[in-house]
Length: 241
Image (cartoon, rainbow, N blue to C red):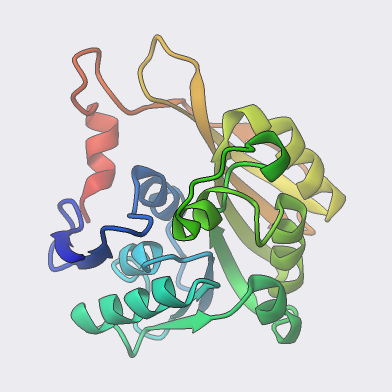
């Protein structure tokens, strides 16, 4: 069943979601707000766009002459993303491509200024109990693309000096940095995300530069919830344009 929701407090943004498919999460919001495209960022891509939530938010912060492309392997999710573009009158600014990232990137060498990705977090061999709904299991597990394949695709698609923005599990940070360095990315910024201040870190936001200079900066940790479960002021600041 399809339902239409407001995108938090982003004025004029609505999103159509399918209840049996992967709905957008806070992770996508955090990633979209982690880096604001510059005027010089004309070509932007979202790897694994699902229902198009990241391009929708980025559309609030990019120039009229910028182009955003969302790539999604799941046909139904890509169709839903296209409906969301029509719903928000963004078809002139955002394009959705229904294709495997590994195939899509083959003719996009040195093409993009910025690539975002909120990828599947879990390795298949470490998470044997896959969701019985393939629409959900593909979004959560590395069934169609591995971390290494994802980073390689970003390497191919980005211009020299282009930015790769990624959100992932904190527990895989050492592996992520290793894979980024393997493909000659320089990790520039890391922001560690905590659900609550007294809990272990859950996610990390990472900015890496293709063929960039070394120099890593750890940002102030982002805590999402107060002890009573309400959102912190720092989190709420990200929930509107």
